[in-house]
Length: 481
Ligand SMILES: [Zn+2]
Image 1 (cartoon, rainbow, N blue to C red):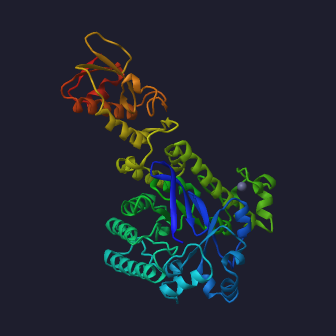
Image 2: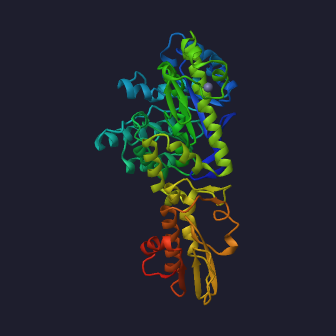
Image 3: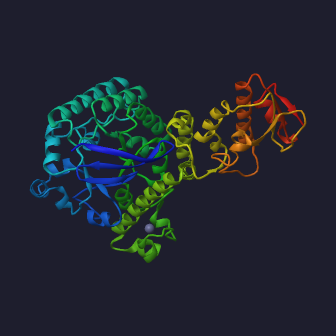
């Protein structure tokens, strides 16, 4: 049975969807917790009880394990782990990236993954680290693509195969890889080898790598951001169009006695309070958690619940069309996330094409909001407004004689015909007192109106305090004050 992906709702480039592999499915965006059978603080059954619909485990570990290899082959992965949701297996690429070599071939791992009843198999791709030079990235991408072709040829077009997208930090290679993976018929595409970027908080570069990959990957494909990780970056990644995450972070952080929150992490030893509504945090004090013999496991349970709850929050945000607000909130929790957010806003022009038409609201949250897709889309719409010969843009609400029409002004969008006053985004936008960034953005809307209606006389009625901004953004305009 092939892997299928159905998109149900969109916001920015994020999607609510359903990923199906065989008879199992997960709602997306989804977090697949990483399960290592040898050291597992949380059982797969507990994960399912917490709402995890899928998980990911490493086929290489199973294939090398005396304890688990035969059991997985005879009973199947689902029975060995006690989990009847979707199980994806990784091939050993991660071991390859850490240890430099693995003792298994591409087809050996694929046959093994098939034999243990995995729902989604991953070929043995080569994870090119972000700091590799171009020659290495090209060579390794060539090898990865050859292995993907081999997998498709030998297992057939309907095998539930993931098609990893590699290419290091080179955007053209990532885009090319995404396109080729799509052409080979892969509908599930992990973007690989981005863990070093995330570990080093290089979120600006992460956005460029993901955006380039997404340009090549067909829009209908499900995208997995391999190795992500921390709940604070899920919203940003979903906004770029990533649908699946896998998290070992819940366990790795717990081992280091770190307490995850939706916006960051804290050292358990420095906490006086446990600011979380989960059962662990409500039934333990920080001191009790610290001194518990079961500390690592309890912390892992908390960390996983925080991560899964963030995924639920993101799904609801997409449903409501308020993903930008959530991205804005999360990305202000760390300067490097803010850098990633700004990098994403630089791509708002291309994101606009995939964004939905109507949303519940537009909350202005500072100058970054001026670069959002809704503002870009509204400015494009301004060109199509039909105007009479003499038009007043009334920033101060005045109506003056000598004009056929007065257009009200709503920053950061700009002038609008009264009949658009109730529709999205004008009617659903909430803004505080005007600031320079939003008035500047609104004035760019006025400029767009003037440039696209050369036969009209457009004058601006402007409050005194904004004359300087109007003159700067709409040079040469007729200003009445
Ligand atoms: Zn908690």
